[in-house]
Length: 476
Ligand code: SF4
Image (cartoon, rainbow, N blue to C red; front, side):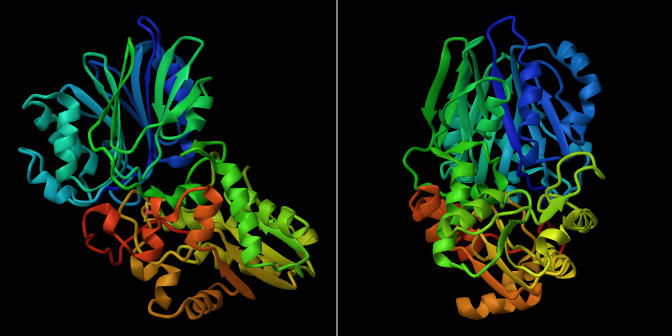
């Protein structure tokens, strides 16, 4: 199945304005959410879709802005781990007079495709987004508008979804799933009165727009010349905000559910220091980049030195380096090679190295080895996310259960399981954060967040997933 965890935007500028340059800039600010492909759609045209980073098309930006000139636009950046990085899987996608961009995973796409005439869902090659959009369009054709269609579709469709839509009549819509798995925000640019939705507020800031509020779980927004209309297509469900967004996926400058991600990560580090006060350490270092604020918070809480003992070689490859979301194993191995220890900082020291997550353990093992080669006396690894033991079916494509480092220790108590992983990665000490600590740092009740990949409770998803085994997948 093609799985999406991506970034979406939707902009409506005043009549006569051109929202395309702002869409391109906002997609660049969401590039951390997907680096395989990007695209935009305006009313009445086939979507423009390109492979690679947005910036790789920079030579064409002027031409694209002129050719697709429109006050209404939606956009998408994509990452997936199955289905290939081909242009046909890039978004937005067109279905009849509607174009759609999707962030999330439709967990029951195969079943849903049975309800869509003429739409055959083929695992490995088809898009769950196309199935969902086709069903939505068919429900809309029976009357009642998009809100009614979504309220019907939500009973048929399980999984996570933040959609932006654009119709050929120039309307821009945004919808967030009833559990609010993936983030989505509403913004406004005072300079020209443009309204905007995006996966994260980093996309708003990139184009001079202000954050108005989070899009509510179960809410449909319609951006129009007269403002923003809101309709709840699934009111009052218990939320399941993805906790992994706060430790890894989201941009540190973004504000989600009332919390700035950088501040939350720093607080995670402070609370991790209370849980594991390794105050005999000489030095705290982050695994770049997502764990940096947590490492700083940890060091500040215990009065320890903070330093950059590991650097990413940013110059041998164009574009961002994020080992988790690179789709191919070879790419991940390459990225590990680009994390370089600084011997002069490490040698002879007890180093506390803070990482955002431990998925397969491949990166952690490579990092521990590199730190040993650089002469570290003792290496303690602390992980800001709880042990990942189960696959995600709500938009983050972890590898199969068997490939998860913590899965090997299934059935053991916490101490035993941690010991198995510690030996696997070769650290002298390993400590994981827990859900209560993470939720407290973010400032949300733990039961309003999703921790399924750690606790295996798939209740919030609304469907019992067919657990993956074998095959390729993302993972650090
Ligand atoms: S299973 Fe994990 S990664 Fe997936 S939505 Fe839940 S918390 Fe996020």
